[in-house]
Structure formats: C-alpha cells, structure tokens
Image (tube, rainbow, N blue to C red; front, side, top):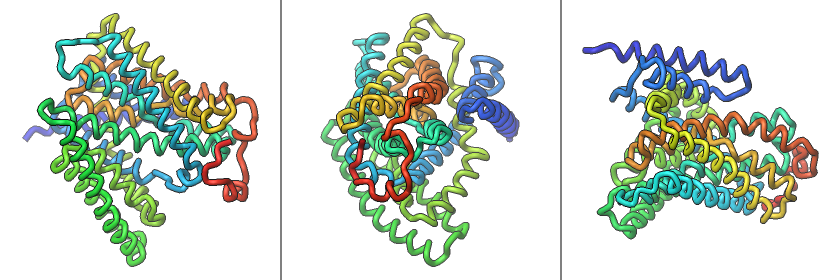
Length: 408
C-alpha cells in the first residue's frame, strides 16, 4: 500500500493553515489563503502535489459538507423581515450576472463547432450569479451597519441568491447529456422537489422529536451527516441532480430547528475546518495551472472579473432601486453582493466535473474569486461612508415592528 496520501494531507493542511492565518491577519477570509496554498503546491509553482483520486474524493466530501453547512446557516427569519424586497434584489442580481458572464464567454471563446458551447457560456454566467457575504457581514459589523435595513436586505437577498443559484445549477447540469430532452429534465427536477417536500416534512418532524428527546447528543450530529450524504446520493443517483443540491436542501430542512441546528453546525464546523474544507479549497488551487496562460486568457480573466463586479452592483442595485431604496443605499446593497468566495468555487467545481468548464478557464475564475473577495470590504468602506436612515442600525424594537416587506 502506498502511504504518500498521508504526506499529501500533512502538506496541504500545513500550507492552508499557515496561509489562511496570514490572510486573516490582513482582514481577509482564510479561503483566500487556502486558494493561494493550492496554487503554490500545484503545477503553477512548486508542483509538490497533483490531482489524485484520493484528493478528488476528499475534496468532494468537503464541498458536500460546505453546502450542508450553507443550508444550516440559512436564516429564514431574515427572509421574513425583508420579504419581497430581498427576492427582487436577488432575482435581478442573478439575471444580470448570468447574462454578463454568458456574453463575456461568447466574446472570447465562441466555438460554433462545439455542440455544448452555449451551455458552457451559460455556466460561466452561473458562476457569476453566486454570492458569498461572509466578508460583507464582517465588514458591516465593523462599520456598525449590519443590523440596518441595508444590511438586512443584503443578508436576505444573499440567502435567496444561493437558492436561485442552486436551482439554475440543477437545471443546467440536467442538460449536460445531449440526448436528454428538456421536458425530461424539468420533469426530473419537479419530481426531485416533490420528493424533497415529502422527505423534508418527515425529517423535520423526526429531528424535532430527537431534539426534544435527546437535546445536544453526538448521535444527532451523526444522524444529520448521514442524512446529508443520503440526500446527496439520492439527488445524483435517482434524479441526475448535483450532489451539492441534495446537501444544501438537507441543511435547509434542519435550519429551523434552533437547538439542533446550532449543535449540528458546531460539529460540522469542526469536521470541515479540521480536514475537508482545506482540502477542497486547496484542490481548486492545485487543479489551476497558471503555466499555460496566454494573452487571451489574461484578457478574459480581466474581463470576467470586471463583469463580476459591475454585474452585481448593477443587478442588485437596480433590484433595490425598484423596491424603493434610495440610489445611494441601492448602490451600497450592490457593493455588498460583489464577493463570490467559496460559492463560486463550488459551482465551478461542479461545472468542471460536468465537462462545462474547460481546465484553461479555471485560472480566470480563481482570479475573479480572489479579486472580488479582496475588493468587497474596500468598496463597502468607501461606498458607505455617508450615514442614511436605511444604513443606520435600528434597535431590536424597531426591527420587531418593521413591516415584513420593508425596504426603505
């Protein structure tokens, strides 16, 4: 038996941790450090670690756990506070980047001989629809604006944004087989959501009962992880839907059981933080080969990054303006949705596995993720200097009395 995988694990964990802590020191999320660690270890720099079957499978576990945690972290109460406003902001904030990414791809790589060319173009758009607001949340908290109406709108829209992105991803991956008819794809997705409704109701009741009977017991965390893996398997095996979709909705089913949710999240965070998440983010960097960059790819990377930034500002800002926010506050909401982070990487990984993202397009995507993550706090601090009623934190009493569809 070859024990090289143990050395690979040790090297990846050390590099991701050291560079993750370095990123944290300069007020950036650790995911940036983990990506850079993968780039350093992979063929782009030191070429110490390469893609292996073991690394691919452990990275897949990492992405499933991350999406399960994203579902658990979904705060349904935020959606109730912002209501229609968040939905409109998220919807337009998905449509504009989708169209922008599609156009950007066709401008640089319009291969008419490729039967999947349009699907690939749309998938680049899907990557741009993603939003990761972890760094936005931290920045708004530092600025004392997290609990403002602008902050609440950003959080609510980000939740809906993720759900819409998952649905678009689900539809698109259904078309990867040219022999499959559109009616069959939508029928399969419809059946999946019916299945989800039935299973969701049953499992919500079951976990609620376990919550009352056992409280914070390790068995609940184990049962929830098993439920996550089962949902991932069923989604892929029986419905032809991405495993991360099953994982995300498994978390969403459990997110409203307050005590259980917090306990499971705590255990999943340890599991992901210690091993699987670093392996996933490092694997993205490892599979990104910068050695073969051409001037066209560099130009595409610049265009993709600019499109990523502008499309979220315009799309989400327009949605906020439609819902009655003043122009300054609408612009602030757009800035808060710029960061792509881990969500875009997860979508890109799924696209790569489905054959919808070519290897030479990974460097531009990684660059886009890093730049949007780095630039978001700077944009927020510059773009939200002025105090307005909508970006000033309100008291808990005001929050409680705020209309469900309040948006100004």
